[in-house]
Length: 505
Ligand code: 0RQ
Image 1 (cartoon, rainbow, N blue to C red):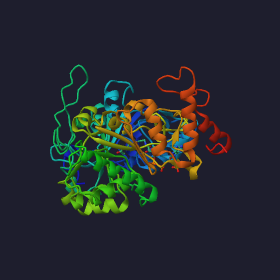
Image 2 (image 1 turned 45 degrees about the vertical axis):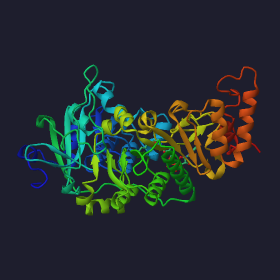
Image 3 (image 1 turned 180 degrees about the vertical axis):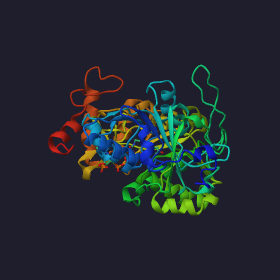
Image 4 (image 1 turned 120 degrees about the horizontal axis):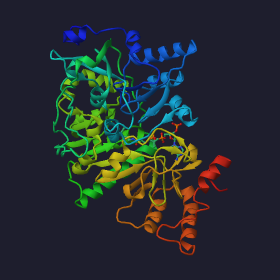
């Protein structure tokens, strides 16, 4: 306790997790730390789930509204969903039990752009924030809080919550101190000022959170490691997608639209395809690349180690077990190349636009005109959420969406006549990539876009049928600017629901 909690006021507040959760009451709105697999409170949240379960067992009701950075460690998400402890969830989840509750209509879920969360809470859309539970790595002699392996919305939670429970985690390497840049300059309209960040490595804030000690009701100690982000080796499909992306970068360099060595700051989602793109960059001609993204994944650590990437800014780590070990062991090296910021800054539209970010995100499906569905399977069942994809896609210099051309062994085509749910409109989508090829939609009208999307990106098994749809739509009287057959626009989805495949035959 002496080493991590270096301030007497806070040492006196150290209690067990079981005692700390007594501050949380049924109906409370609870804001917790956590972004992807990093920074979720590891002692208080299981104790809270247990507290809720016991209250239920004795006939009481206990549900909270849960606000986070993005997804949190999946065991935490599952525990709280399992005990039916969540009335409302915001802003992102990626866990089967929670997803099931949401899709059954038993848990309210508000799926918003990650850059909007802090301002919407400040604006009061989510009412009074009763309790914040925030993981940190230590408390300084002067009572400031040293952030953990993710920042997410923690600055906001610490500012707005009536009561604060701190979880001090001694697993986090002490040498991470200084990796963080906490910006306190955001304000609400009409008092906003420009955010003076013009290079990915710019330091615009301070290394620590500040807090009024009066509001800290409990300090809990833990030494549990972050959970790991599962990592699968790139397969042939994701490698093919990555190759198309890399060819496109070379093409853009040749056209004089991207700097040859450094491109522009990269943002990429997590997962198979993103890791394949990162691995491909490592084999390419690039040196001194930068990243301005949400998360730092294993592939990024390799790029930093090799000098391919000079600097990476994010709001969280999302590392596998091997990646976490590498990060902890080599923290003295990584701290010169990595910075963590609040998510309202990592995803800020003003900064994304100014830096000229290359945004690469996954999708479920796109339609022939380039509208993208990232969130709703068959238009109705939530998968994860929009996350930060919209923050980057709308404002990026290049907005790319990546996916295999089929899913479920070919029974689902990722290119469809019309998407049954739109997360990214045709106006926000410039490039679509599948293992089949890359559709560059810039400067194309809808009638030209549709041909390019089908020819370049659709799986050959679905091309003829998609083309037939487009041709018949264009042939109808008064076909319009964006031709559709409204009675058939969802025929692929309807067929899948009826027969288990989108194939016509
Ligand atoms: O389902 O998990 O049940 O097997 O969707 O699909 O192919 O593994 O792809 O992991 O890249 O996820 C859009 C979900 C893609 C993700 C999405 C089913 C498929 C599988 C996953 P199972 P894959 P990915 C990140 C910015 C929004 C958030 C975001 C996502 C599952 O990219 O959540 O971008 N994006 N944040 O079976 C029905 C289809 C389908 C389909 C795939 N067309 N119809 N199901 N699936 N395509 C910013 C950061 O920096 C973190």
